[in-house]
Amino acid sequence: MPKVVIAGNWKMHKTQREALEFLQDFKSHLDETPDDREVVLCAPFTALAVLSKTLHGGRIRLGAQNVHWEKSGAYTGEISADMLTEIGVHYVVIGHSERRQYFGETDETVNLRVISAQKQGLIPIICVGESKAQRDAGETEKVIIKQIQGGLVNVDQKNLVIAYEPIWAIGTGETCESEEANRVIGLIRQQLDNPDVTIQYGGSVKPDNIDEIMAQSQINGALVGGASLDPTVFARIVNYR
Ligand SMILES: O=C[C@H](O)COP(=O)(O)O
Image (cartoon, rainbow, N blue to C red; front, side, top):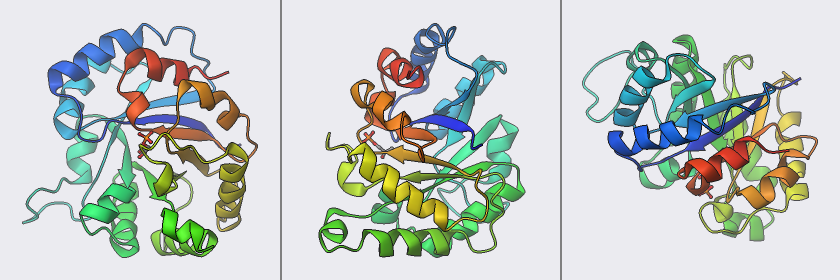
């Protein structure tokens, strides 16, 4: 059975002070959180450093939002997997559509980052998803299969999470119908050798749609953007029924 993973992607939000304030409030909502799900905070690098000192284990895992494939070197602005694991980071988001759109991420660089992250013991959360134009042109399946196949060349499918995030549903309030997300995620699953890979849905996940999303047979979690910034709101998502 795939493990359920609910991850908040804070993107470029929260200073260290704001991250600690969030944590203090958020932790108080986790007492009743069932053990059947992993809770992950994918925070900016500076916030990760301070959160890791405050977590002391517990049930929250930390995730980064990018990682480079080399161990060290002249790569201004990048970060290595060692630097992340040293401070207790477990997950890393790779190939988010915003990285693909604004920072030139390709399936090839996604693949390099994934392989290197796994080698250093990080669990990659690989993001895939089609644009509105691609969906309207009937290209959803073609786009997703290309991203999955390109991103997964020589990748160990044991420690791996995939997030299906239709770009048109990110930050727009327009959620993909849960049955449709389930269908596309089923298609992604057909591309994999390991039936236990966790596949999340991401795109305008909110307290009022999380229960329906998590009731779908193929969906094993959520990658939550805007709604993960408020501790009470994200706690309701994590504590889906
Ligand atoms: O990584 C998260 C996604 O980009 C979803 O963002 P959102 O929940 O604000 O739509």
